[in-house]
Length: 610
Image (cartoon, rainbow, N blue to C red; front, side, top):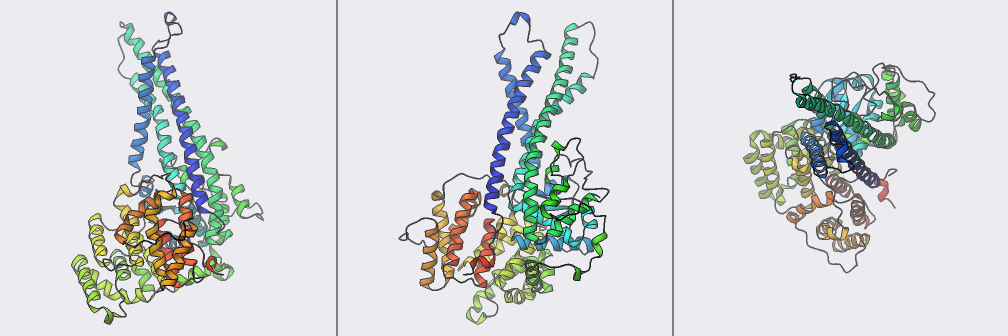
């Protein structure tokens, strides 16, 4: 792949470390300035005191500043604990139903679906923002939690290719690990700015009930509070000034990368270039009018807020962005809607886009429509976990018992849906079954917490012994991606710096399960040897027995590890699959499932050839 996403995720982590360092320096500056301000406001610097500093007072003030900033950050972090949807809702976003029949919204949902499948990511919920500007954003803590937000102007003013370019840009932010950094930035800037808010409230308090002129001390105290309030406002907004500089500098570089990745995903540079040109020629531009747009301005596709100085811009100039993806640009922007009339024959599809559309077209319309509704989406997942419906003679009792479980846990309506869809689902090759699973995510996230818990119990029963890798991956994917909608503890993850050697007890059983899919005993042995060789382990290293119940404990540590470790892990998995020099359809499906679960970039088919 042209972009190494492991390197980009590592770069995002380094940017976060730099961000935290700059934040610590900003807090230190706030402590020093606040101490000086309090001393000046309440007369601590008297001639009789000389150069002696009141260290007890300084210590108290410093602790107060640290506590206030920390509480402000924690309060904002708590506000954002629901991840991407909390940001979309804070901007006035309305979730688009996966089965919406509105033509423009349906087109948007189709584009998001296509780009999710191209990037091998769970299809995210989509939010519509009632804004005339052409803009969009991706928000969340991880791909499992991501949402896409798109403005009304973006839906109405862009052609399908241009909309695809914008959505592909947002998927790049999801893959590159930018979303987590962006949420942290929101919380950090809120902490710095909160000092200014305190000063503002002190100023208002100072304008309250007047103090009797006969009391000089009271008047001096009121004047001190007013001066302190004014000083805190200045300090807070000075901190915000430098905070916004940091935000702008970090954001601009990530936007260039996202533009380049959008071309890679969509295989169509005209799409994102056309969207940027459209913004330049549109009266409303990319402006977002919502009151909360400023604090999340770095999340958007285009510059959401008017800036009085270019140094505060969270996005590079339109002209520079356009020329990077379209060096032959003539310098002219596009007026609204002019390219909406381009016929399909005039649009030259790239080979990758044709392949993607062909795969989607091969999925029966019944299944595509079913994946957009909660109960049929549940039925699709059940069908993937059922024993092969075409050979019931081999295991009539097992298949029948699974149907009884569906009726017991899901009721007659779910059983009826499973009965209608199972044959069609199981006829599909595994890669397309995986696509159906991805497409079903938004509908499954519409379930209530109680419904999902009951559904999850059913899936556990359906996939119980004997379980294979495919079933385990499907079940784990649902638990990881959909459960995040109902359990906020699964959203906020912290990367651990453990060595790869410390992960081996969890990793090796997973590699063993992958090797077991290779075929006969000789093929399994060769696949295992290829995997451990990639990790630098000796050929004599014993192959562990696979216990899927124990593998459940491996998911979070592998997700929490560093991008460098993830890249080594992924290369070992691919080595096991490549060992027989063949890449079957079933192996492609398993690789896609593994990549979805472990949040890895899926390799192209040609990487396995030769």
